[in-house]
Image (cartoon, rainbow, N blue to C red; front, side, top):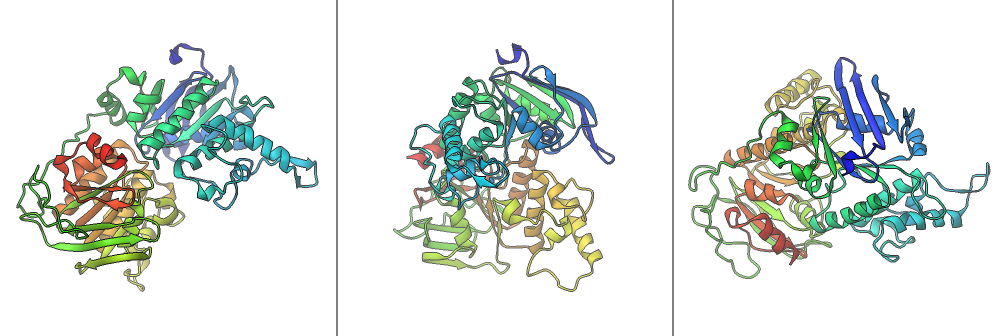
Length: 522
C-alpha cells in the first residue's frame, strides 16, 4: 500500500499564523513516492497555507519538512522547483495567444548563448516535446504549434501539467526530474469525461514514479483515484487513511467536526414559492420551437426565451422561467451552459431567437469566474458588494461599510470586516460576497453559474440552502452546475443542454445523477 512505504515528503508539526490568526496548528503530512495523496478540508482549514509552504511561497513559523529523507525548507518557489516540487494552480495561467510549446517553456526558455538573452528555439521545442509526451494520450493529441486558446478545457489542463513538469526539470531520456506535483482543484472546471481523462494521465505519471498531492473538494475523485487522504480542520489533522476503506460520511465528519445534513426539504406544490410542478409529473411538451408549457399551478413567467442562439453556443435554447422556482441546466463542459446564461443576461450577443423579460428588478448574473470576472480581488468587501451602476454615487464610505457589514452578518461571511480585501477570503466566502451583491441589488431573476465551484462541503450546503430560500421568497433562478447531485437535490426542474440544444425541462424528481449524465452524453 502507498501509505506503508517510506515517505517521499514528511511534514511534522507545521505551524503558521498571520498576525493573531493561527492558520496551521501543528499539521503533519506523509506522502509516499509514486502515489496520489488527497488533501481535504473546509475553506479556511489551512490547505492553501500548507501547500504554499511546500511550494516555497510562505515560510512556516514552526515545524519541519523532509523531502527524500533530506531537510526541506524552500525559501522561494524557485527553490521548490529545483527540489522537484511543482504546482498546477486552480486558476488557469496559460497565455491563449501562445503556442503549446511556448506555454510549456514560458519562463524556462533555454538560452542559445549565456548572457545574450537569445532563446534556443530548437532546445525549447525539445523540452516541450518531452513534457507533452508525458501527459498526452498520443503524439497528435496536443500539437506543439497549436495556440493554447484553441484547445479544449481538458487539453489546456494537460498543458498546465506539462509546464509544471518542465519547470521541475526533465532528463534527456524523457524521465521526470520532478518528484512531487501539487494539483489544486484540477477537475473543478471539467466535466465527467474530461475529468476521467485527466486522472488517466495522473495515474500514468504516478506509475512513472511521480508523487501527486491532490487538493480537492470532490470526494468522488478522492475515492476513485487517491491512494491516501489527509483531512485538515482548523489547521490540524482531523483524519487520514485509505479513501476506499472510508465512507464518504466519515470523511465529511472529519472535515466538519459533525455530520452534514444534506436532505432536501421540498416545498409543497401549490404553496407560495412552491415548485411549479408536482413531483413526478412530466412537463407537457410545447409546440416545436416554443418553450416548455407551464404546468398546472405554475408561477408567472418572468423570463421567456424562444429559440435563442449565441454566436457559437447555444445553437437553440427555449425556456420559460417562473417566479419561485429553481430551473437547473445540466450538460457537459462545452455544451454552451455558460454561454446561454451570458446571452440571457445580455452580456453576449444573440445570433437568433427572442428573450422576453417580465421582471421589474431585472436580471443578475453570478459568474463562474469569480476571480477574473465576478469580483475585484484587490478591493474590499464593501467595494465589491456596492459595485454596480445602481449603487448610490454620493453615499458616504461609512454608509457603504455599514451596508456591507449587514450582508457579512446575514450570509455568515467569515471576514475581519467590510474593509478586508476579498482576495484574502476563502473561496466559499468570496462566493458569498458575489451573492451579497446580487441580493443587495434585489434582482427578480438570478442566473447562477457554478456557484459551488472550488468551495468546501459546508460552504456548498450553505450556498445551495440560500438559493432555495431565495426561490421560496419569490426569486426566479437558473442554476448551472457540473455537480449533478446538486441539481437533483436543489432544483425544481432540470433541462439538459446537449450539443448546443436545450431539451425541454422535466421535474427534478424524475431525474437521477445517472440519467442526467446519460442524457447529456448521448
